[in-house]
Amino acid sequence: MLSITEKEAIDHEIGLVPHKRATVIEALKIVQQHRGWISDESVAEIAEYLEISPAEVDSVATFYNLIFRRPVGRHVILLCDSISCYVMGYKQLYTALQSKLQISFGQTGPDNRFTLLPNACLGCCDHAPALMIDKDLYRDVTIEQLDDILQQYT
Amino acid sequence: MERPLTRNIHPDRPPLNLKEYERTGGYVALRKVCSSMNPAAVQELVKDSNLKGRGGAGFSTGMKWGLIPMGDKAAHPTYLIANADEMEPGTFKDRLLLEGNPHQLIEGMILAAYAIQADIAYVFLRWAYHKAAGLIRKSIQEAYDAGYLGKDILGSGFHLEMHLHTGVGRYMCGEETALLNALEGKRATPRAKPPFPQISGLFGKPTIVNNVETLCCVPHIVNNGADWFKGLSYSDDGGTKVYGVSGKVKRPGAWELPMGVTMRELIEEHAGGMKAGCSLRGVLPGGASTDFLTTQHLDIKMDYKSVAAAGSRLGTGTMIVLDDSTCPVGFVHNLQHFFAQESCGWCTPCREGLPWVEKILLSLEKGEGKPEDLELLQLHTQYLGPGNTFCALAPGAMEPLQSALKYFREDFEKHVEHKKCPYD
Ligand code: SF4
Ligand code: FES
View (spheres, rainbow over the protein chains, first blue to last red):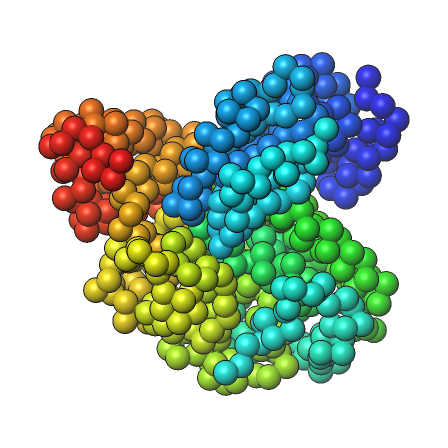
């Protein structure tokens, strides 16, 4: 069941648009914020609340890169794999992260601390290579800095 | 040299709050418009200024606004949307404006909304710009509190609501009609045109979508006039442009300069030239979906017409530099991977063709390429070219590929001949 807080936040969004199904992306964002990811159950609950089919909710949920349909760790590392970061050496960063965390793209470590995902351009190509952990952006990242950066996330 | 858009932006200091923005002349344009100009006059002024859309397509902004039905017969609500989605790899210029001076964008949006008599405005912000999201949310509130948003703005009888929408990561949201679908809570697939969004856009109502940089120009045009704006430029296109350079240059970054500075000035002066030990081989002048230019083009002017005449597009004016230590095949493979991944899957040539292109490039890189692969790639640049797909994503993806096949052909051939990447 959607929690009271989730419902209130979704209701606020519904108030801003002509019909409530238009809030499905916002609803997914809200639920993900509270639960970390979107389970089949969450899909069904959102569908019921917005009076649309679960398939419709799922078609939207699976379309957007930052809606997670599988559980993620406590922190999500998004490593930019787009062109400026490619030129500036994201692959070396990826190799270093893989060996430090013992996970590859798409995986979560057994301690559930990090999920490592590739991500298209983070919009700071002038400071490539870049990565983002949760909402924190790191720019001009070097392999030497990785330990210090990771250490901030427990 | 005047830099109206970035004069008050100091990346090492927090952005201007409302009071500071007002002190630098902020919201004067809005006062002027509310007290002495009708919507048609604002549209006319912007048309005269020769402002062209800075999101990539370069269409006249005044003309675009002119397509909105006005007067008693017009359908309402009418929407104005700031396209702050900017997700093309190598493109980062709007971040400077969003983080540096959010009120400038908001004032530009209110002015644009006034010109088309919009009732509701959205900032459609790229998800990765978390810092900008906080700033914009705060600035919108400040504008409401000051009476610049909401009911009866500055006693003019004009009402406007403004909301922030943050995306959830999909390149397609930058496409005008796909963005509308995303705002309606749908998959961001593009819509068939006509009807154009100006007639039937968000929720079926008249809608204008403008890029952030475009909207930021508007307050300055209102304050200083169309001729002043045209005079800022070195070319026929009015105004300044926020240009950017990324890649192996000494000082990657973004700078506001007169429209029409040369590529050489951008790379050699502003970006400080190439990093020690590298030399320049190619440039994507306006983001990942533009054709390569090479050293022979260094003296062209970076404006819409000149870049087109050289065989590419100005796009967003944010250049990505290819140096001689980077494999052009790997470079293009990286771009095609992005486009294949971000294809919305709506039409077959793009959905099936881009992964195929990506696979061919991967096998070339691994040294498993065959001579006929180059032929296949060439064919794809036609099959996925303009007119064969539903939207511009696939043709855009083919631009760097086709020009790489033209300018760096020997690199592709070497991969096949030597059965390995010569840069490894
Ligand atoms: S060209 Fe690609 S992105 Fe555009 S509609 Fe077709 S499948 Fe979607
Ligand atoms: S390409 Fe990595 S941040 Fe833009």
